[in-house]
Image 1 (tube, one colour):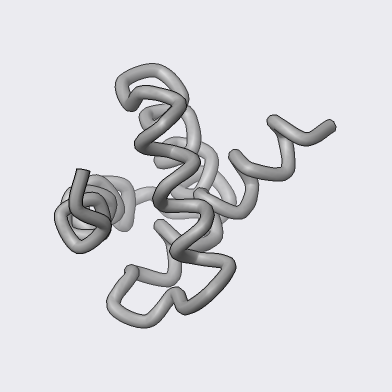
Image 2: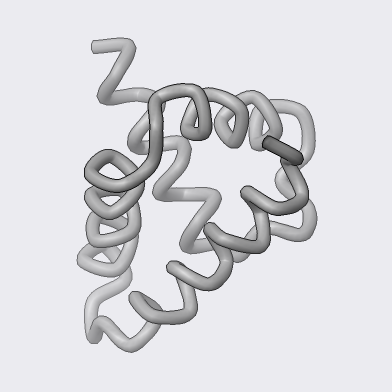
Length: 74
């Protein structure tokens, strides 16, 4: 899938979770959503993009992608 489409979709998810009162809850909500509803390949593509350049990605989404990637490596 095109990485820019993944970025757009992750940003949509981040906008939803931005209403969480605690930043960490929003990040965890995004990470949980990605884990549940995205394929591993989609998550890997977005994580690779974030490693290179996370511009264009909502900061909450970028943090969630990093958290998800770290949990998969552990």
